[in-house]
Image: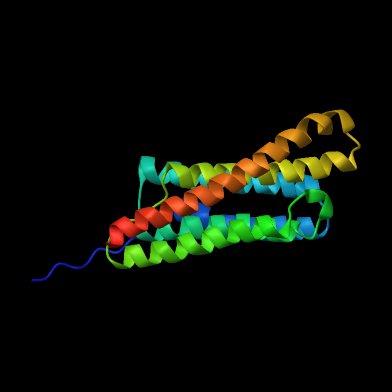
Length: 193
């Protein structure tokens, strides 16, 4: 008698939290188009919380599944890359097209590499550098939405403090994005050798 192969469960709390980020991302995009900065800020923060929560739940209560390991970064990429792309159209956001090309190119590169490595049967999940990059990307986007909202409210004193911090975060995020991408290339080359 042959054993029935075990399949990863599709319907579970971590996967539901990952999937929830996709409609939340759409709300952020719509808010960006309509300059509803406060709502965009709140919804983006909720989406970031679901990102942290799905990983925490999967590690603490399970299941750690192949589906979840791929669904989580896909939802992250839709949220983050989409938000950066939509913000190109907002001159006051301070997001230049070349910055978005760096972010999106890194995500496409890592997705392609992950697919190649995992096709060989090896695990190729996020490491600390990738998590730092994601944290900085989220911090930058929260900062952009917050600053755009505060500009509408003429909060010049707060902006005088926040804008220089935001600029440092933005360039730190770009360095981490490039650095983590290069690290994934090196890591994949070793695994595929």
